[in-house]
Picture 1 (cartoon, rainbow, N blue to C red):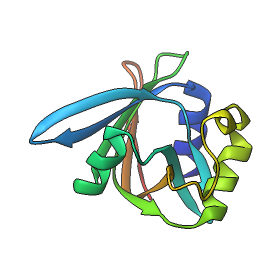
Picture 2: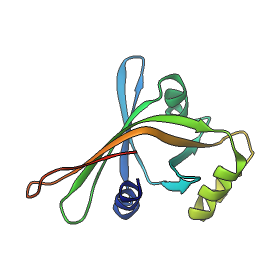
Picture 3: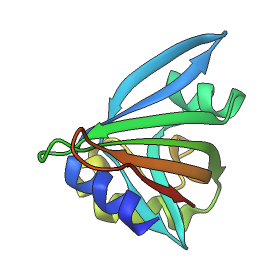
Length: 131
């Protein structure tokens, strides 16, 4: 899991895919954290992406590194209802405090559970990671 975290953190931007009414929805994301042994991401509960993850927990993430490798992560996005998780995330991304406050009813942290990642490139064998 640490390798997945480090890859996504270094990439800066990753693309999160969800499902809405049977249709794929993809958008750029940038938050990733490790909290209590779980890989987590953050968004606002009022956003469509949060509602999509609450309705269907299956997500996929894709990112590319500067060295030409890419990662694909499949996981279940599970809402973490602990204010400490939000506090930890916002400490990692202090610029988000302009929009989010732990316990405000909007700040949402999702743990990525039952995860599987593949780091691949055109020049090396894929590396698979389960978490």
